[in-house]
Image (cartoon, rainbow, N blue to C red; front, top):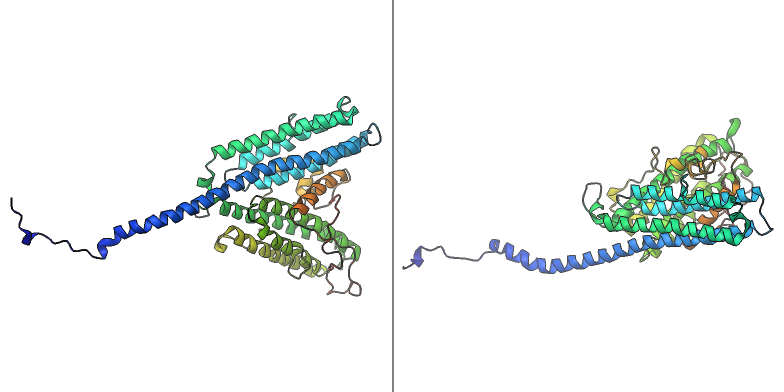
Length: 430
């Protein structure tokens, strides 16, 4: 059969026809780039998840060392008295709460981790007979276990190893069975890298923490500085509030530093900026802004709110850059209500309400009732101070206020002098 070539449609290559071929050629290089990017993301994800496991072990080791020291002190002068046992229980309880606060903050950054965090807190803080806190209290009161420091120490160590071992196994199971990467999405429902998702969670967590502290700060300031119709705060009350606020900011830094510690491959690049934004002796640091507040009641609250919002902005900027979070995805205003706390409300009754700030809303920041055992605050803040030092945070303290201006209507609440850069030794926050 003869084909009439004159009637056939001739094939003429054109640029329009080359689109598929071009796409295929380009995709080879693009696939290589995507594979390289995915490999890098996978490596970083692996490092983050490994850091979570390491943090669980490190928290257990840190808590074990602290409790061992407390057991030794408990028996330093022979058989402990009932009051000494109560003080021991209070201090250990504060340390356990700090450990639970740290691990809960870190685990809650993962998508779909609500149940994981709840079970972690129940295993450490719950009232059930098998919770770690209940077991420690029962052991310290036991005539048999409480008769020997070595016996008590070994018994507590076994319970600690069992509790943290179970939490570690629970975390491993969560990581193995949860589609973490698929659940890492932005507000529009689009999938994003796990590190970016966790970065957004850190910023949201920080907003709730500082927002709660800002509200508690004004409440406590009004009751301690301007009670009973006082319009101008006294220097002694100013110093007391500033140092209590330093403790509270130390707790916020503890949470933030613990979160950032999950990114050990480059967290050192953001740490100094966070320390500067919180505590540096500069006009823009949050602690310095709080010391420059007017000491008259009519201007105090608004100025304090502005200081906390400015401080939050100064912290969010390096965090967004560090985690590559689009600035449009974040709000730079602190929430003013509906605050969330990583420690569940069912544990607000611990130590007369310490985790809820004795009703103020921020952990440990408020007026403690007379029944509060201050050893609880000593244990909690001792744990926090040690971890802050390892994370590069140094919390300043205030010993004196400037002379010559106190009592005027324009005087600031105070300034830091030579004490900037020193680490405050904290005890009870009540």
